[in-house]
Amino acid sequence: MIFVAFFELIGGALLFLLLAGMRRGVQSASSWRRTAACIKTFGMTEGAPGVLYEYKVDGTSFSSSAVVPGAFFFRKNGGVKAPKSLCVNPDGSLKFAPGAQVDVFYNPRNPADAVLVPGVQAGEVVKQALIGLTLTGVPLIGWQNRDWLEIHQHAVILGVFFLFGAICGGATLFFLRRCLLTRNYPFVMGRLLNASVAYCGDSEGSGYMPVVDYEYTVNGQRFQSQQLSAIPVRVMSSQNTAQAKVDRLLATPEVKVYYNPRAPWEAFLHPGPYWGLAIPLLIGAGFTIFGLFYMNHH
Image 1: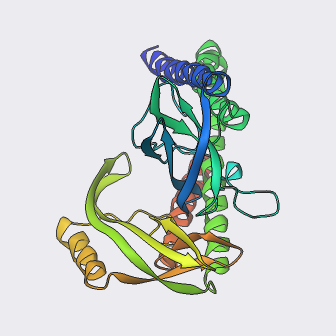
Image 2 (image 1 turned 30 degrees about the vertical axis):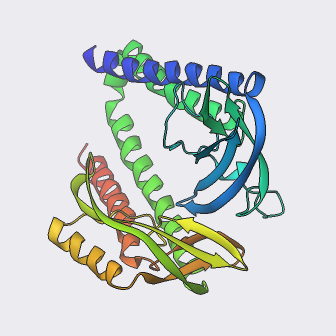
């Protein structure tokens, strides 16, 4: 029962944040004011748009990087992930190209709180609602049907093994396609804005990794990105090893930036890493092997 209560708490918190975020989205569309803004930079890092724009309210200059209102509170750095579709037109062109004059919507009670796209984003609402309802509903259904699960536990465990194996196999195919697409990308010389070492610690492990920020110009438009490699694989190492990589980058502030010729705002510094394909492949193979072993011994 404690296990079920834990997931009910996590799922309930997500649903509460969802409702609070919807309230903030409605406010941004109904009562926030409109003014002109200039897009300074735009880039795409691991599929998430990053934008910086400047605007004025009553003669005072402000800058922001928020695309959507996000959660129920104002984040000064605007670090709220927004879907790519909000920033790209159906024909593939940018809605917020660098240098463009666009409308921005700001909170009249706090002019520093601004967004490019006000309102409630239906797709994000559905996605978060599904996650919250899954976390709250699945454990509760499992608890209510614990007698059935106990009778069919072998089949359930086997299904879980093969399900995770299939998911990891799909991730391998996705990254393989990404490698094949990016291996022939053109490049331009860009300028390194920042490179530092960051400590990361989560359920996947802990260690140090380089963090970069760079800008580059394609067809007269300036873009900015923090994506280090074509595949978003986090390589954590010792602090000295990570610092050595950062020192090599800082020694040559002019960096080679590979970019998508069809979408030049998508860029990275290093192709691959191709060995990153092995990570989901090995994990998926492990789940599948354990599943076969379990099936043969029960």
